[in-house]
View 1 (cartoon, rainbow, N blue to C red):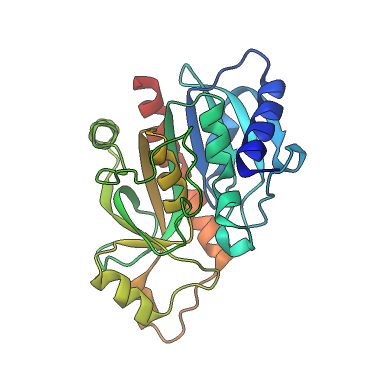
View 2 (view 1 turned 90 degrees about the vertical axis):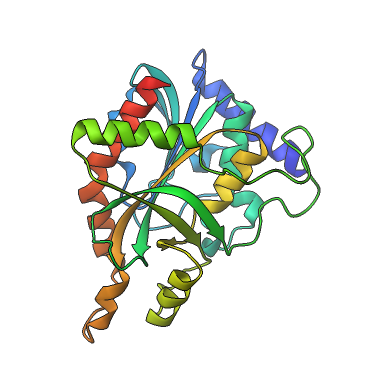
Length: 274
């Protein structure tokens, strides 16, 4: 089966589960951020393991479901957990859910993640609007171009939609939520970064680092889907100055969960205004 056939078979299965539902907004929920999916009304739950040709998420804090239903007056399809390159999947598999969401008709993509703060001014629990990214993962568009989705050489001048960023800043100001804004760097993982790597990422212009997101955004922009992205800062570079400091995966999920309410509010308000 070709990759295009895999995409279409998975999309056909998802469509069959949806009946008359037609999602216009796709949402990718990262580590510890699945709480927003629980706010979707009249949810249809589609486990990844039931979708033909679909990879299964194995990461901490990722349940591995599509959740489809109503949120802020719109029909949305949320990924309750994403697929990562470090799990051993090919990049075509990592980004398959985005391709499937495109086929079933999404017009916007919202992405979120838990990230380490390389910016020395960041603190645990900060929310950062992603204004740009540096992708150090394999590019998901390598290989034959999917002409039905987009051009061979897609423009990436504005990977994160400026109008959605401005709208998020207005929403946050009205709600009294302080937001950071910065550049996200995506690397392979699965080990957390060394202090020297934190310093390197900061030197090349990154404010936060993680193991996801950029490939999904590249694939969405290949299909001209506007993207809004947000990181929850769950650990910080300056903490590594403490000789007893250890980066802990469970603590990261807990920090993401603690900030999830604020991020969920911003996402809901943004979707309401689309």
